[in-house]
Image (cartoon, rainbow over all chains, first blue to last red; front, side):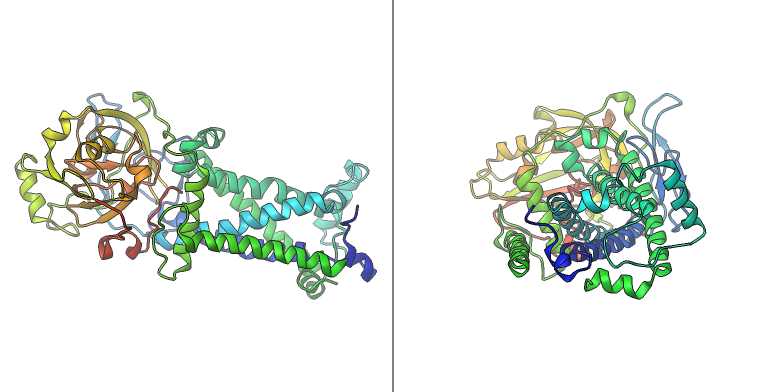
Amino acid sequence: MVELPAPAVQAGRIGHSRWVRISHWIVTVSFMTLAFTGIVILMAHPRLYWGEVGNDLTPALIELPISRNHRHGGWEKTIPFFQDAASPVSASRTYEIFNKNGWGRSLHFLAAWFLVLTGVIYLLAGVFTGHFRRHLLPRSAELTPDLLWRDLRDHARLRIRAATGGPNYGLLQKCAYFAVVFLALPLAVVTGLAMSPAITAAYPFLSGMFGGFQSARTIHFVAFVVLMLFLLVHVVMIIKSGFKRQMRSMTFGE
Amino acid sequence: MKTHQLITRRQALIAGLASAGGLLLSGWPRKLPPTYGNILRMGDNLTYAVHDALLPGQSLAREYSRKEISSFPATGNTNPGDPDKPKPSETYRHLQRGGFADWRLSIEGLVARPGSYSLADLKRFPSRTQITKHICEEGWSAIGEWTGVPLSRVLDAAGILPTARFVSLYSYDDWADSIDMLDALHPQTLLAYSMNGRDLPIPHGAPVRLRVETQLGYKSMKYLQRIVVRDEFDDGGEKGSIQNGWSWYAGI
């Protein structure tokens, strides 16, 4: 293999490759922007549902008290569409809701472009440089319940290895990065696409495989929560293992 | 070699950014809305251009069974005739009192036969009924049955001129918006006069509203008044979505 990480080997240390460092920070900024604008978007309708349909006139799965829009109220008398008692209804609002979705949505999708394009380059580079195989994929020898348990116990006691400044990750660390790169972030992207009326008209299976538009929206939110929890743990681990060294090696390399 | 490799990557990155930038600036594949130097509008245009380039044209949005019709909030303006609502319209109140018998939809601009259509005129066209999902930018969704005349039928009757690129729409509650020709001629794009088997209720846009099923709800303009076929993009000024901070393209 010609394209082994030559710079790091030459330097005699295993640091983060330049493309890893650049994509790490682009994804960081994109993700933070997506998280922030995602909350702004959710504040316009902080109710989550399952299936295709969900609105203020149907029951919610989860109501999030993150804006004044989250509870019913301020609706005119409901009018049934059909004669029968179980008929779906309509009603008009009697109040102005909080809605900053105009810039929120546009910035969300702009950040998503950066995340997706960087993500695609990162995935290709990860495969072709062998980065995933060598650094991210847990080896079968280390994936034993014994070693997993030991690493888990060490982390629970906050006994964290000092930073190495490079990609020779610990076992739980590999598992966490693997889950974020190959599961949580792709799930967030695909459930995001599954909410687009134009994309789902062309590819209905995208929303169908999640059980509908509102299910995709709910899973999109769950992916956000998982990624935020990862971010929290990630930052704690960075601090515990040597904040300055970690930031330096992920920004300027070793 | 280390240096050689870095330059190749950088070149690849620059080439990628340059082509994305070129896409935004050149107006490919068709005329794009202006960006006003606003980075958010550049992102909107990138999404529009990529959808336009990559999605198969005029795919049909999913249609549902009557059993799946759901409750459906009426939002935005729910009665332009009500003086207490924003942007009240004296004309609309008058039309409403007359049961919309005097309502006319005018079709102007780049058409061979400009004219105006009454509700009865529109109902004489072959109709289409579809049960589709309405997705609001706020995040809610609802399924409803719409009956109306496909916009393409009315535009065909008026005779679109070959230079036509956009269809601008104007409403009685003083909004202006537009859709591109691909969406205007989409088989599910309707001038809908009926909802769930009855005359379109006033809160949902009586007497006629637009249905654009491949975009978010705010593109399905209520209380239609006037349609203008154009060869240039028109943002609708202060009455349009862009100048109110919303993306013109709402397919995502």
